[in-house]
Length: 276
Image (cartoon, rainbow, N blue to C red):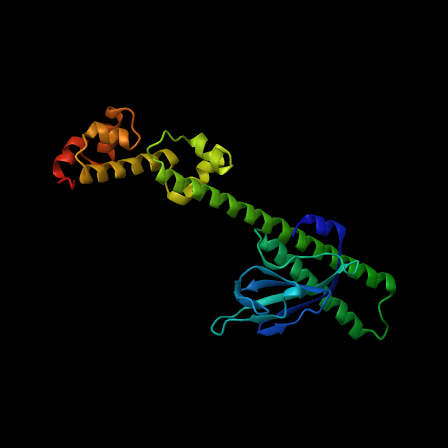
């Protein structure tokens, strides 16, 4: 799903309804729906696919329906269903599945306004024997379409943003695995950031978020851990161990080892019984 489809098609607002109970939502051919959770969460099962626990939004595409929407038995939930069509008829529109947003307040505000406008419009019909004139009806429909377009835009843009963030996170995770396997090499922050395909600043932020440490601190600690293993499992000298785990300067290795473990490499080595 991308913005090219949204540029070439026009969403036509059909209805909006508020629900607090479970239901089977059957979107017929040509009709689409967005489920927007306003409180709690719901479980949505599309056709024969696996259920999905939804706390934000979900796009119901007729190709994947019907959709069983279930509210929790022990907790209250509230959700809105917006039904719409894409014009011209038959226009390609593949939006389906979970929708993410960082702008829930904006979306909920627009949903509240859609519900309010619908209730106000309906009350006018009940209070008057005359129907709305064509111009007023067109204006009403136009306002609803504008808000629907805005909701679609936010969900589409921010769902794509989150997907990109997840892809970036996976790339950074891959470099952490790479670092764990190649700790003995002369690894640098620019090298790993380039491998992840992000800037050094962004990489630094994500790395610390995932590990709780900077890349340099993490690598140093990892190398010291590997040195401890070598001291336990081999009879290599401290200088040889330093080189094996990626330290070219033994005196720097000795200082970092003591900082991490509280004792010098030679003292640590003396405490071990090598398993050869």
